[in-house]
Length: 214
Ligand SMILES: [Zn+2]
Image (cartoon, rainbow, N blue to C red):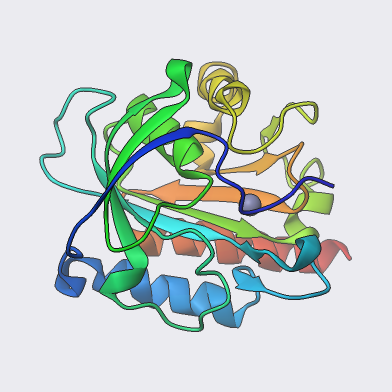
């Protein structure tokens, strides 16, 4: 069992004012639903009591070069909160997966899984929202649900995970499906899309499919 919530990358962080909540309304609404579904949360019985799950959204300009595609992500250890305000989000302004380095600014430090989000944004300019949740139901049935799965030997938040995500985009239909399972990160599921609604629907529909299997 790996520790959730521990930042494993080299973080260059500046404390600044938050981005306007106006920009995050749809993302924040879906984040609230995911919390209600217990796909994001904090529970003494799960993952050593660490908060789990995080959401992000790409910032304009959307045609920026890979590595410079800035995005807003929920802050580290915000999983326990039912709703978030702007002060719980942080902007990742640059990232270097090979060097395991993230540059971020905001009122809170970025999620420990920022590097995985960064890698997905770098791989496809059409992806605007990423939702990372923890669902035992989807995760345990990933194979039956035909989900692409990252190598179980690879831990979350590492450069190796970023490379695994790159492999999924190269070797599987993940781009079309918009959802994959993190084999080495217990219950870890990532969904993405052009909008929060698209990513959220993909997640919830796979949860429904998982429930039909059980
Ligand atoms: Zn996680």
